[in-house]
Image (tube, rainbow, N blue to C red; front, side):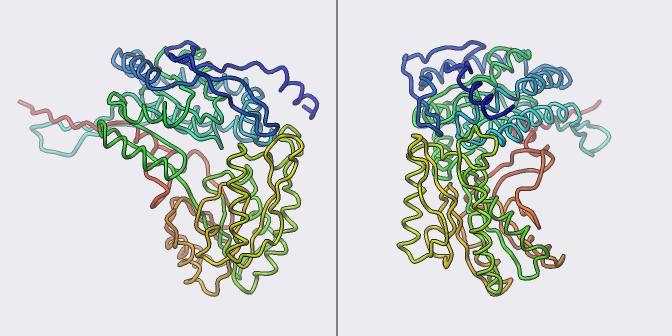
Length: 495
């Protein structure tokens, strides 16, 4: 499709703005609504059900009822697999719609949502569906007068609180394994991007998922999110978002029923270019993409670029050339590589960090300005800072925008020290032609994922999550399915 077609579709698109509870679209109990804006234009996408504790009580009750009835939890793995494969198929048949919803809701380029977000959502559901009937329980090696079984059972009611930067993908990372394992799931999407979760729930119901097994509660974190975290009949909170909110959810879990908590939180990921890099141009192009992709609103964004001093100025100059290809445009233009920041609040936060970086002595090498303000949308140029020291705020705090801090180092040991000097530990990357350096530095980096001579590589077979204050637990891979099950030991004494 061409640009005109995408714009025409966006004007004709019909979508739901209500909560999805027990198989039905419904208003919030209070009747309250909130507005969600299109980041590209600043215009409202509609009035959404503003769910709070009353709606949480309803949804949790239906989720528990569905779980205890066994309508989903007691189905065989192969039966759950067939329903989830149908769900994935329906997503694939509606990729254009899901991609457009993500672009309108989150300001993401349509080429990205069509090329990655929408198909990745379908792949995640299908992968977990295919995996669930290939996981075996265990027989423990014990004496001949006993049979010792180790079995997995679903947790129960899972509440998934998902972010606005990858709304559908992050929801699928929770939904796929949790549903495959037999749980009932309640998704609380960000109030900034609620469209795709509601749409996915409707497709899942159409695919045959029983009422109450997958529900969606639009609303605010301090209302619906907090109520879910404090609810004593929720067995698990799984969350992707900021570290500050993750800490609150852990506290709420402790204050209520000690529910399982899996947190995927913030990052300030180091990206290291060693002097023996084989292809410097490729490394620099990748470093530019690692901070510009999705407007820098990525928890694994390579926001700290550590460069050997012998290459430093060359890399800074090349970066400023590279980011010219990443200037923001309307997300519905197929040629757009970088879209709009999620909202005015986030845009002002990013602009504040750009100002702070200059105040603290960093050099603004290029970018740093708001652009396209006449559209009503929220756009910021890719921004490169040089002469950054590790103690500066722009080198330590998660900005969540297209702002890159370039830091010089003189030795491998210093690079490792700077990279690990962070409260975060989500991702890290390095470029080197020496296999020994690659292995030794990868082992030394305190991060959940390390990329060698690439950035953001991986697929559904690899677990994703962080060290330190980047969280706990893991999304993706068989390790994720394990997180949504309880282990039961059964000791049978034989006559």
